[in-house]
Amino acid sequence: MAKIKGTIIVDKERCKGCAVCVASCPFQVLHLSSQVNGRGYPFAEMEHPDQCTGCASCAVICPDSCITVYRQKFE
Amino acid sequence: MAEFEVEIKPENLVYGTPKLITDRIMHYCPGCSHGTIHKLVAEVIEEMGLAEKTIGVSPVGCSVFAYNYIDIDWVQAAHGRAAAVATAVKRLYPEKMVFTYQGDGDLAAIGTGESIHACNRGENIVVIYINNAIYGMTGGQMAPTTLLGMKTATTPYGRDPKLHGYPYKIADMMAHLDGVCYITRQSVHTPVNVRKAKKALRKAFENAMAGKGLSLVEFVATCNSGWKQSPVASNRWMEENMLPFYPLGDIKDI
Image (cartoon, rainbow over the protein chains, first blue to last red):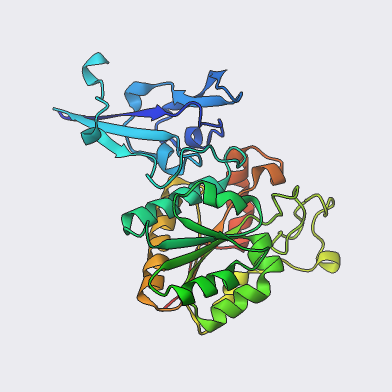
């Protein structure tokens, strides 16, 4: 069966750790990192990358435009 | 899960930062609705191919620096006068796409007169109105749009109608004016609402290019610093408290 998988790339320095993407993800893929970026904010990262479908909900709502979404179909 | 490793290549790209959003990191507080709305504006301009033809008018308020974040031509207007400046720009360059980007302090308080008269004249511009029911930049004071009972720096016991008057819905007022062709109220607190808001914004831009009259897109937005809540909690608070008073949807569409 074909599977659709997604992944995201977060611009860590641009992220302000508002966690709006974490709340918007329908599959609870994201969480805030335990590390902080150069400006002292924790940034969004994938906690369960295998559950990402590439729906782009996180990127659509991100106020700082720091998420890029990729999606691929596996036959 | 190595067998399902998604390759990072342009063919697999689903969603990326719009090209018109500059690399400069926005000064807005974490989770501020302005960032999402800036992104929508940039996406709509990019998709309509208007990057070289659009002139924005930025207000006074948090979004005063909008010209730093979207790579188009901008004018920065005096407080509340964005609609008047946009009128002049549009009349001098009728082939350009002109929009204003104003908060509730700018449009609904100091600039009420300019905004209402621009609507009444039916200028072919788009007014983007961000309503977060508070004066965010100056430290969270009461705005005309503040809800009854809402606590702000200047209404520490909640807004009392006997003392402070009632909140008002300027979008509903403007819907009565004949020069206005499209008024809608949107929000950006969930991905679904963001996608709906983008469609509304595109329609407003198309109306302005078609010369139908003034289009006003109100965004019910959050100010998590002013409301003293986390970004996620303020989205929830907005849904529970703001949206019953400022219901989403089209108010006027002709």
